[in-house]
Amino acid sequence: MPEQVSRMTKLIPYLQTLEDELKRPLNIVETGCIRQITHKSNISDGHSTEHICEFVKNSEYPHAFVSIDIDTSVCQKYLTEKKLIDYVHFIQGDSLSALHFINSGLDFVLLDTANNADQIFKEYMLIKNKLMPHSIVCIDDANLDEPTWKKGDKIIPYMVERGYNLEMIEDRVAVLRRLKTI
Ligand SMILES: C[S@@+](CC[C@H](N)C(=O)[O-])C[C@H]1O[C@@H](n2cnc3c(N)ncnc32)[C@H](O)[C@@H]1O
Image 1 (spheres, protein in one colour):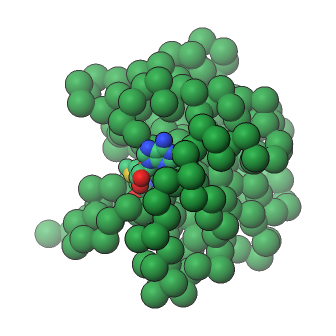
Image 2 (cartoon, rainbow, N blue to C red):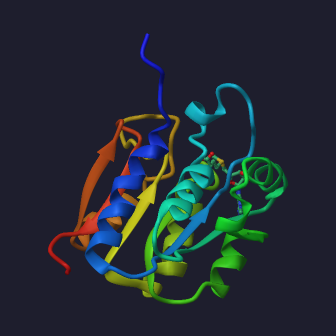
Image 3 (cartoon, protein in one colour):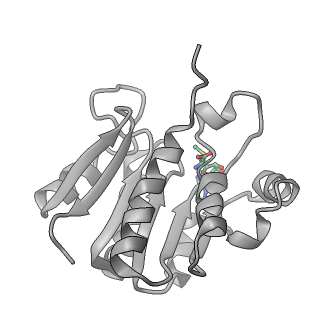
């Protein structure tokens, strides 16, 4: 059986594309960091924080990666063990408070906190004016046909209506970006 890979690794080519296009350090924000380390959590949750840190580590640019969660302790310990802790800045707190402190000029955002359409929509509304025309916004657990995953239910129709193109990774991670922006 081929080894399963995390769907979050499939976000890395989007980051790579932004880096290739912009040729400068990227501003990357994630809400919802790694919350558990089990033998399956790399696949079930995705371990986005780890995979984005690997991207930052391997890049020639000093990308700025901020990860927000109400409890960053598991993730901090894990990334320290993996020697990736220097590639992310954590903000511990509620995402709806923390996003106020995020600077404008975001290139790449992953929204992955509560399985709640309103929560993710509110997070988006807080960063909406901090995005640029080329920005990429990703939502995990966002398949609109899936009755248990609610994260994309409000934000996806809202963004698509406003000109964003939607691609799905593994029928689960929504990647939203305006076409022809650079
Ligand atoms: C699905 S997990 C994130 C998984 C992670 N992105 C990964 O790929 O492994 C959701 C996380 O959101 C956090 N969370 C839930 N509600 C939150 C809120 N209102 N503010 C900040 N973090 C929140 C939880 O503590 C949890 O760690």
